Image (cartoon, rainbow, N blue to C red; front, side, top):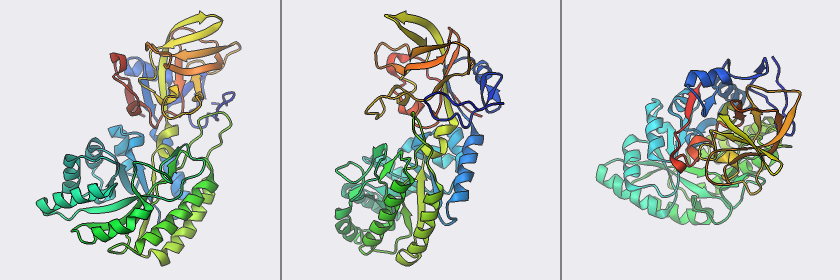
Length: 412
């Protein structure tokens, strides 16, 4: 058994290779394709997820609550599996709420975030007893009206748009003008109004950014988060009992990127836990992680349908594409397109190589899964595998485009 490193890409750290075949869950990708009936498909390895969660538990101080952000991958079986190992679930729609409730997790450990929650969504969440992360004064007043009619006292936190950003993050979620949360400078006035309403305020949700590989930047943001929450707590109508510090933990995708070093983050969080005993003595501190828990545990597999040459360039045409894996095509937030790590799953190494473009079968030049990547010489019928595909894959993609069948998903 070997674990080769693909040239120019992050290390193939989790999926072993046996007899030149990529393995997932103890089976080759060719066996999985046969088992599922064909390609394309996503496969998620629960052992890799378990390993990641346990590694985090070992490095984080015990008082830190670990939440899973369901939007990263809402596959019901996967959510069910993760729910047994984390302290809470964070959801962003009524569909995700239904999935979270079906896991059997205590509704008091489910939090509902996101702008533009509809009245029906809010009512369902209130009735279920989950925590509502409110995003605006309008939403807070709507919750108060719904609660008055139903006779329920909702539990909520204020999602704060901080006056700082998570530096070097792949996607900034705070620090400037944003549709997410309530500007930090507006929070005191909103808390004053909240004190007049029959609502139970638990504390704050402060999310500064995501997909960060720099421990120092994450630590700086976490320090600033606790300081901001401490300042805002002076205006709260009751002691802060929950501070969701967001996440931001990234995974390597592209050449030159290195895995996040979580150890110093854990050490810093231990200091913050001690500080919070004085500044926010009744508060639980929570991390909300999605991509970091599941991203490296998933692969996307599609089959080569055609191999053609156009003006000197080789194109591998597959039965997959951007409609099933938008992120890999570079159309999900990348400023400069880069290739996700890609391998030929049934031919991991070979004496001869080709420089190829891997495309789907959509009628758009945007349908590009890999651009000028060197791979073992590939033929029709071979299996293209895109790594780092466990998060923001299928459900982040425009699956209805051109009306091709949806890929299957399997939890191994």
